[in-house]
Length: 326
Image 1: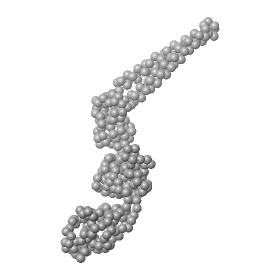
Image 2 (image 1 turned 45 degrees about the horizontal axis):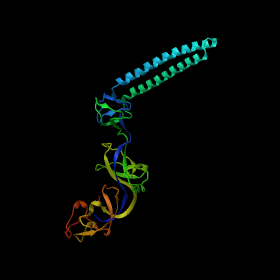
Image 3 (image 1 turned 180 degrees about the horizontal axis):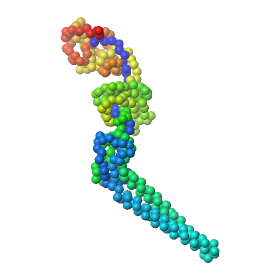
Image 4 (image 1 turned 90 degrees about the vertical axis):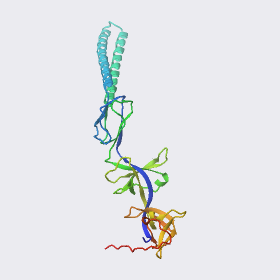
Protein backbone atom coordinates (compact mmCIF):
# COMPACT_ATOMS: atom_id res chain seq x y z
CA UNK A 1 0.00 0.00 0.00
CA UNK A 2 1.29 3.53 -0.81
CA UNK A 3 1.95 5.76 2.20
CA UNK A 4 -0.14 8.92 1.99
CA UNK A 5 -1.68 11.65 4.07
CA UNK A 6 -4.84 10.39 5.70
CA UNK A 7 -7.51 12.09 7.83
CA UNK A 8 -7.67 10.35 11.21
CA UNK A 9 -10.31 10.72 13.86
CA UNK A 10 -8.32 10.84 17.09
CA UNK A 11 -9.72 10.63 20.56
CA UNK A 12 -9.77 9.03 23.97
CA UNK A 13 -9.76 5.21 24.19
CA UNK A 14 -11.92 3.63 26.86
CA UNK A 15 -13.13 0.39 28.38
CA UNK A 16 -16.43 0.08 30.17
CA UNK A 17 -19.58 -2.00 30.45
CA UNK A 18 -23.17 -1.94 29.30
CA UNK A 19 -25.66 -1.08 32.01
CA UNK A 20 -29.45 -1.12 32.04
CA UNK A 21 -30.77 2.37 32.71
CA UNK A 22 -33.54 0.80 34.77
CA UNK A 23 -32.69 -1.99 37.20
CA UNK A 24 -33.94 -3.03 40.62
CA UNK A 25 -32.97 -5.22 43.55
CA UNK A 26 -35.90 -6.88 45.31
CA UNK A 27 -35.23 -7.18 49.03
CA UNK A 28 -37.19 -8.60 51.94
CA UNK A 29 -38.76 -5.70 53.83
CA UNK A 30 -39.83 -7.94 56.68
CA UNK A 31 -38.27 -11.06 58.16
CA UNK A 32 -39.80 -14.47 57.59
CA UNK A 33 -39.96 -17.58 55.45
CA UNK A 34 -39.88 -17.02 51.67
CA UNK A 35 -42.91 -18.38 49.79
CA UNK A 36 -44.26 -18.54 46.22
CA UNK A 37 -41.00 -17.59 44.47
CA UNK A 38 -41.38 -19.12 41.01
CA UNK A 39 -39.56 -16.75 38.63
CA UNK A 40 -36.02 -17.58 37.56
CA UNK A 41 -33.21 -15.94 35.58
CA UNK A 42 -34.43 -14.74 32.18
CA UNK A 43 -38.15 -14.73 33.08
CA UNK A 44 -40.00 -11.55 32.04
CA UNK A 45 -41.81 -9.58 34.76
CA UNK A 46 -44.37 -6.76 34.69
CA UNK A 47 -44.38 -3.65 36.82
CA UNK A 48 -46.49 -4.42 39.91
CA UNK A 49 -46.35 -8.20 39.40
CA UNK A 50 -46.23 -10.28 42.60
CA UNK A 51 -42.90 -12.12 42.54
CA UNK A 52 -42.86 -13.78 45.98
CA UNK A 53 -44.31 -13.59 49.49
CA UNK A 54 -43.05 -13.72 53.05
CA UNK A 55 -45.03 -16.10 55.28
CA UNK A 56 -47.76 -13.74 56.61
CA UNK A 57 -49.18 -15.57 59.66
CA UNK A 58 -47.16 -13.58 62.23
CA UNK A 59 -48.11 -10.27 60.65
CA UNK A 60 -51.78 -11.23 60.33
CA UNK A 61 -51.91 -12.13 64.04
CA UNK A 62 -50.12 -8.92 64.98
CA UNK A 63 -52.58 -6.84 62.94
CA UNK A 64 -55.52 -8.60 64.56
CA UNK A 65 -53.98 -8.02 68.01
CA UNK A 66 -53.75 -4.26 67.50
CA UNK A 67 -57.24 -4.12 66.01
CA UNK A 68 -58.56 -5.86 69.14
CA UNK A 69 -56.65 -3.42 71.33
CA UNK A 70 -58.18 -0.55 69.35
CA UNK A 71 -61.69 -1.99 69.88
CA UNK A 72 -61.01 -2.41 73.61
CA UNK A 73 -59.74 1.17 73.84
CA UNK A 74 -62.84 2.39 71.98
CA UNK A 75 -65.05 0.63 74.54
CA UNK A 76 -63.08 2.32 77.35
CA UNK A 77 -63.64 5.67 75.65
CA UNK A 78 -67.42 5.08 75.64
CA UNK A 79 -67.38 4.20 79.34
CA UNK A 80 -65.15 7.14 80.23
CA UNK A 81 -67.28 9.49 78.13
CA UNK A 82 -70.47 8.48 79.95
CA UNK A 83 -68.72 8.84 83.33
CA UNK A 84 -67.48 12.30 82.36
CA UNK A 85 -70.92 13.40 81.15
CA UNK A 86 -72.53 12.20 84.40
CA UNK A 87 -69.91 13.96 86.53
CA UNK A 88 -70.35 17.12 84.49
CA UNK A 89 -74.09 17.13 85.26
CA UNK A 90 -73.46 16.46 88.97
CA UNK A 91 -70.90 19.28 89.18
CA UNK A 92 -73.38 21.63 87.52
CA UNK A 93 -75.94 20.66 90.21
CA UNK A 94 -73.35 21.00 92.99
CA UNK A 95 -73.50 17.38 94.10
CA UNK A 96 -69.77 16.57 93.58
CA UNK A 97 -66.56 18.56 93.52
CA UNK A 98 -64.66 19.57 90.42
CA UNK A 99 -61.86 17.22 91.46
CA UNK A 100 -64.01 14.22 90.56
CA UNK A 101 -64.79 15.83 87.20
CA UNK A 102 -61.10 16.37 86.49
CA UNK A 103 -60.37 12.74 87.37
CA UNK A 104 -63.02 11.50 84.95
CA UNK A 105 -61.65 13.84 82.24
CA UNK A 106 -58.15 12.40 82.71
CA UNK A 107 -59.58 8.89 82.44
CA UNK A 108 -61.37 9.85 79.19
CA UNK A 109 -58.25 11.41 77.71
CA UNK A 110 -56.19 8.34 78.64
CA UNK A 111 -58.68 6.06 76.91
CA UNK A 112 -58.60 8.29 73.80
CA UNK A 113 -54.78 8.19 73.73
CA UNK A 114 -54.80 4.40 74.10
CA UNK A 115 -57.21 4.16 71.17
CA UNK A 116 -55.02 6.35 68.96
CA UNK A 117 -51.92 4.33 69.86
CA UNK A 118 -53.68 1.06 69.02
CA UNK A 119 -54.84 2.46 65.66
CA UNK A 120 -51.31 3.60 64.82
CA UNK A 121 -49.92 0.20 65.77
CA UNK A 122 -52.56 -1.46 63.57
CA UNK A 123 -51.49 0.74 60.64
CA UNK A 124 -47.84 -0.27 61.15
CA UNK A 125 -48.86 -3.94 61.29
CA UNK A 126 -50.92 -3.51 58.10
CA UNK A 127 -47.89 -1.97 56.39
CA UNK A 128 -45.74 -4.95 57.48
CA UNK A 129 -48.38 -7.31 56.09
CA UNK A 130 -48.33 -5.39 52.80
CA UNK A 131 -44.51 -5.52 52.75
CA UNK A 132 -44.70 -9.30 53.01
CA UNK A 133 -45.77 -9.28 49.34
CA UNK A 134 -42.80 -8.69 47.02
CA UNK A 135 -43.73 -6.88 43.79
CA UNK A 136 -41.72 -5.81 40.77
CA UNK A 137 -41.21 -2.03 40.57
CA UNK A 138 -40.26 -2.17 36.87
CA UNK A 139 -40.97 -4.11 33.70
CA UNK A 140 -38.00 -6.19 32.66
CA UNK A 141 -36.35 -9.57 33.20
CA UNK A 142 -34.93 -11.46 36.14
CA UNK A 143 -31.13 -11.26 35.99
CA UNK A 144 -30.35 -13.05 39.27
CA UNK A 145 -32.23 -15.16 41.82
CA UNK A 146 -30.55 -14.80 45.19
CA UNK A 147 -32.85 -16.78 47.52
CA UNK A 148 -34.83 -20.01 47.48
CA UNK A 149 -38.40 -20.84 48.59
CA UNK A 150 -38.52 -21.94 52.22
CA UNK A 151 -35.44 -19.93 53.13
CA UNK A 152 -35.65 -17.81 56.29
CA UNK A 153 -34.88 -14.22 55.31
CA UNK A 154 -33.70 -11.32 57.40
CA UNK A 155 -34.80 -7.75 56.72
CA UNK A 156 -33.06 -6.34 53.61
CA UNK A 157 -31.98 -9.78 52.39
CA UNK A 158 -31.69 -9.76 48.57
CA UNK A 159 -34.17 -11.96 46.74
CA UNK A 160 -34.07 -10.97 43.04
CA UNK A 161 -32.27 -8.62 40.69
CA UNK A 162 -34.20 -7.21 37.73
CA UNK A 163 -33.05 -5.36 34.60
CA UNK A 164 -34.89 -3.65 31.75
CA UNK A 165 -33.00 -4.39 28.51
CA UNK A 166 -35.23 -1.97 26.62
CA UNK A 167 -33.01 0.95 27.65
CA UNK A 168 -29.25 0.47 27.86
CA UNK A 169 -26.23 2.74 28.15
CA UNK A 170 -22.45 2.40 28.41
CA UNK A 171 -20.84 3.26 31.74
CA UNK A 172 -17.17 4.22 31.43
CA UNK A 173 -14.75 5.11 34.24
CA UNK A 174 -12.13 7.61 33.05
CA UNK A 175 -9.29 9.55 34.57
CA UNK A 176 -9.91 13.21 35.29
CA UNK A 177 -7.23 14.14 32.72
CA UNK A 178 -8.97 12.22 29.90
CA UNK A 179 -12.34 13.77 30.70
CA UNK A 180 -10.98 17.29 30.06
CA UNK A 181 -11.28 16.78 26.30
CA UNK A 182 -14.75 15.24 26.40
CA UNK A 183 -18.03 17.00 25.68
CA UNK A 184 -21.65 15.85 25.62
CA UNK A 185 -22.60 14.93 22.06
CA UNK A 186 -19.21 13.56 20.95
CA UNK A 187 -19.36 10.39 18.85
CA UNK A 188 -17.70 7.13 19.88
CA UNK A 189 -16.77 3.92 18.09
CA UNK A 190 -17.67 0.96 20.27
CA UNK A 191 -16.86 -2.73 20.19
CA UNK A 192 -18.80 -5.19 22.33
CA UNK A 193 -16.65 -8.22 23.08
CA UNK A 194 -14.81 -7.85 19.77
CA UNK A 195 -17.80 -6.99 17.56
CA UNK A 196 -18.35 -3.49 16.21
CA UNK A 197 -21.74 -1.99 17.06
CA UNK A 198 -23.67 -1.17 13.87
CA UNK A 199 -24.47 2.38 14.98
CA UNK A 200 -22.65 5.21 16.68
CA UNK A 201 -22.59 5.71 20.42
CA UNK A 202 -22.72 9.23 21.78
CA UNK A 203 -21.63 10.87 25.04
CA UNK A 204 -24.86 11.78 26.87
CA UNK A 205 -23.71 12.51 30.43
CA UNK A 206 -20.48 13.23 32.31
CA UNK A 207 -20.46 12.94 36.09
CA UNK A 208 -19.59 16.19 37.89
CA UNK A 209 -17.71 14.32 40.64
CA UNK A 210 -15.06 11.61 40.98
CA UNK A 211 -15.48 8.18 42.54
CA UNK A 212 -14.40 8.14 46.17
CA UNK A 213 -12.02 5.17 45.86
CA UNK A 214 -10.74 5.08 42.27
CA UNK A 215 -10.88 8.88 41.73
CA UNK A 216 -12.22 8.17 38.24
CA UNK A 217 -14.98 10.14 36.55
CA UNK A 218 -17.98 8.24 35.20
CA UNK A 219 -18.92 8.96 31.58
CA UNK A 220 -22.16 7.65 30.08
CA UNK A 221 -22.76 6.92 26.39
CA UNK A 222 -25.92 6.07 24.53
CA UNK A 223 -26.09 2.59 23.02
CA UNK A 224 -27.23 2.13 19.40
CA UNK A 225 -29.92 -0.48 18.90
CA UNK A 226 -28.41 -3.91 18.32
CA UNK A 227 -29.63 -7.45 19.00
CA UNK A 228 -27.93 -9.51 21.66
CA UNK A 229 -26.79 -6.71 23.95
CA UNK A 230 -26.77 -7.69 27.62
CA UNK A 231 -26.49 -5.90 30.93
CA UNK A 232 -22.89 -6.13 32.16
CA UNK A 233 -21.21 -6.87 28.80
CA UNK A 234 -17.64 -5.61 28.45
CA UNK A 235 -17.09 -2.89 25.83
CA UNK A 236 -14.14 -0.94 24.49
CA UNK A 237 -13.79 1.84 21.98
CA UNK A 238 -12.70 5.39 21.34
CA UNK A 239 -14.48 8.71 21.77
CA UNK A 240 -13.65 10.99 18.83
CA UNK A 241 -12.36 14.35 20.03
CA UNK A 242 -10.47 15.75 17.03
CA UNK A 243 -9.42 15.14 13.42
CA UNK A 244 -5.86 15.31 12.05
CA UNK A 245 -4.25 14.91 8.60
CA UNK A 246 -1.12 12.76 8.94
CA UNK A 247 0.99 10.17 7.16
CA UNK A 248 -0.62 7.04 8.56
CA UNK A 249 -0.59 3.26 8.24
CA UNK A 250 -2.72 0.55 9.85
CA UNK A 251 -1.35 -0.24 13.29
CA UNK A 252 -0.95 -3.87 12.23
CA UNK A 253 1.67 -2.77 9.66
CA UNK A 254 4.02 -1.49 12.42
CA UNK A 255 6.51 -4.12 13.60
CA UNK A 256 7.75 -4.05 17.20
CA UNK A 257 10.13 -7.03 17.44
CA UNK A 258 13.09 -4.67 17.56
CA UNK A 259 13.99 -1.98 20.06
CA UNK A 260 12.77 0.63 17.55
CA UNK A 261 9.39 0.27 15.84
CA UNK A 262 9.68 -0.17 12.08
CA UNK A 263 7.68 -0.80 8.95
CA UNK A 264 8.47 -3.03 6.00
CA UNK A 265 8.78 -1.12 2.75
CA UNK A 266 9.52 -2.11 -0.84
CA UNK A 267 12.42 -0.30 -2.50
CA UNK A 268 13.50 -1.38 -6.00
CA UNK A 269 11.69 -4.68 -5.60
CA UNK A 270 13.31 -5.60 -2.29
CA UNK A 271 12.10 -5.55 1.33
CA UNK A 272 13.68 -2.72 3.32
CA UNK A 273 13.09 -2.03 7.02
CA UNK A 274 12.46 1.60 7.98
CA UNK A 275 12.53 2.69 11.62
CA UNK A 276 9.62 5.00 12.38
CA UNK A 277 8.38 7.28 15.08
CA UNK A 278 4.78 6.75 16.13
CA UNK A 279 2.32 9.59 16.48
CA UNK A 280 -1.43 9.98 16.78
CA UNK A 281 -3.66 6.94 16.72
CA UNK A 282 -7.17 6.98 15.41
CA UNK A 283 -9.66 5.59 12.94
CA UNK A 284 -10.11 6.32 9.28
CA UNK A 285 -13.53 6.69 7.73
CA UNK A 286 -14.62 3.48 6.04
CA UNK A 287 -12.16 1.30 7.95
CA UNK A 288 -12.51 -0.64 11.16
CA UNK A 289 -8.74 -0.79 11.69
CA UNK A 290 -6.79 1.41 14.05
CA UNK A 291 -4.38 3.68 12.18
CA UNK A 292 -1.26 5.37 13.51
CA UNK A 293 0.66 8.38 12.26
CA UNK A 294 4.33 7.68 11.49
CA UNK A 295 7.45 9.69 10.74
CA UNK A 296 10.79 8.66 9.22
CA UNK A 297 9.35 7.39 5.94
CA UNK A 298 8.76 9.44 2.79
CA UNK A 299 5.31 9.90 1.38
CA UNK A 300 4.37 7.55 -1.50
CA UNK A 301 6.61 4.82 -0.06
CA UNK A 302 5.21 1.33 -0.54
CA UNK A 303 4.32 -0.18 2.84
CA UNK A 304 3.81 -3.90 3.37
CA UNK A 305 0.62 -4.45 5.34
CA UNK A 306 0.44 -6.46 8.53
CA UNK A 307 -1.58 -9.22 6.86
CA UNK A 308 1.53 -10.27 4.90
CA UNK A 309 3.50 -10.96 8.07
CA UNK A 310 7.22 -10.59 8.72
CA UNK A 311 9.51 -10.78 5.68
CA UNK A 312 13.28 -11.09 5.58
CA UNK A 313 15.02 -7.81 4.80
CA UNK A 314 16.44 -7.85 1.27
CA UNK A 315 13.90 -10.40 0.04
CA UNK A 316 12.85 -9.79 -3.56
CA UNK A 317 9.14 -9.12 -3.89
CA UNK A 318 6.78 -8.14 -6.65
CA UNK A 319 4.13 -5.53 -5.94
CA UNK A 320 0.93 -5.84 -7.93
CA UNK A 321 -0.59 -2.52 -9.00
CA UNK A 322 -3.82 -1.59 -7.24
CA UNK A 323 -6.97 -2.80 -8.95
CA UNK A 324 -8.96 0.07 -10.35
CA UNK A 325 -12.67 0.10 -9.86
CA UNK A 326 -14.60 -0.36 -13.11
